[in-house]
Image 1 (cartoon, rainbow, N blue to C red):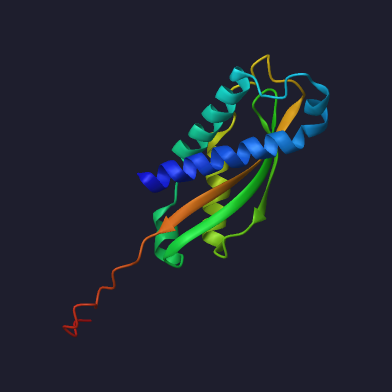
Image 2 (cartoon, rainbow, N blue to C red; image 1 turned 135 degrees about the horizontal axis):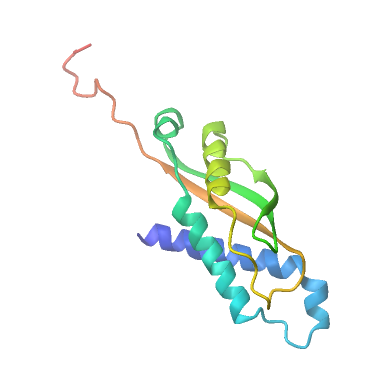
Length: 147
């Protein structure tokens, strides 16, 4: 549970940093550079939704190397909540895990439309998807010679 909460907090911080960096010029001109409460709530709800739909199929658990795998995906969300594009910016080293991350992202969309306080036509995000592939128990570990 602690790992999941840490992962969620890290994802939120990453998304917040990306939003701030993406919109820094416009924000620098504004008197108040803090995102609105509605914007923070929308981003938090998006991160929560992405975590809820994250799924690693059984076939991936069986084929991928055991351990932690992180895939970073950049994507643009339009005001309507639709995704404009998504691309992997950092691969995990396991194609099946990368595919699971892409599929998880696709399941989350469409998101709710932006609140009126969120300005601009779109927002760009980069999200790290972390998957834990459990160690497989070998059928023949007992050493009984069974085949």
